[in-house]
Length: 304
Image 1 (cartoon, one colour):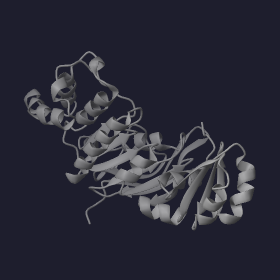
Image 2 (cartoon, helix red, strand yellow):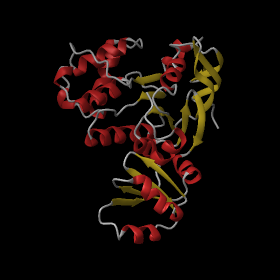
Image 3 (cartoon, rainbow, N blue to C red):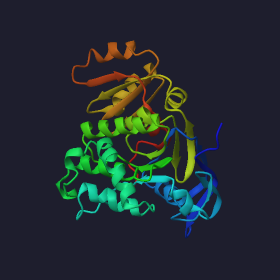
C-alpha cells in the first residue's frame, strides 16, 4: 500500500487557554474520499488550516502528499486543490478569466492554463457561461466554478470545506456526480460537511470529532451498524415525553428532539400496531442512517 496522502499524528492546537484540537490522529489513503465531521466548533476548520500550513500545530506531526507540514507546506500545496466553504471568486472577472488568473498562483504559463480551460469548463458544465461575469451565475454555477478552479493545477489531493452548503438539491446532486468522477480518476478528497447524506454517499471512511477529539472513525456502513444497528421510527406529536413513556418498553432505546420521538427498534411491528390506534400522530419507519450516528455521538442539542 502506498503512503497515505494525508497523515495526522497526535496533533494538538491551543488558542490561549482553549484547546481547539486535542490529540487528533487520522490518515487518508491515496484515492479515497475521507470525511471530517463534527458540530460547529469541533475543530474542523482549524484542522484544515493546519493541514494547509496556514496555522502551525503546537504538538504532533502532519504530512500532506508526503511532505512535512508546515515546514514544506508550500511544496505540498502545489499538489493540492482547495474548495473553501465560501466562494472567493473574483466578481470583476469572467468565468474564463477566473480560471486563467488562478493558474498563475501555481506557476502555470498563460498558454498552459488556456489549454486546460475548455476541459475545466466542460467538467463544471459551464461551457455556455465562459464569458459571463461571476455575478451573473447562480449559486450552483459559482460552486461548480470554484471546484473547477481548484483543479487548475491537476492536484493529487482535493480539500473541500462544506462544498454543497446553500445549494438546491439539483445543484448538490451535480456536485456529487462531479466528485465521484474525480474519485474514479484517482484523486484523493478530504471533505467536511454538515450533510450526513453527502458523507454517506461519497465517503469511503470518515472521522467524527467533537471538541477537537476524535470520537469515532470508520466506513459509514460500519458506523451505522456498530452505533445504531437497528431501524428507526420517527413519531411527530404534541407530547413526546408521554409517548416515550408509552413506547419505551417496545424500543431498544428512545430519543426526543423537539416534538419528535425517535424509537430505535429491532422489531417495529408492535409500535406500528400501537400507532395505528393514534390517528393524531404522524410517523415514518426507516433504516438507520449516518445522521442517527452523528446525533448519537454528538448529541441532539444545538451547539454554538
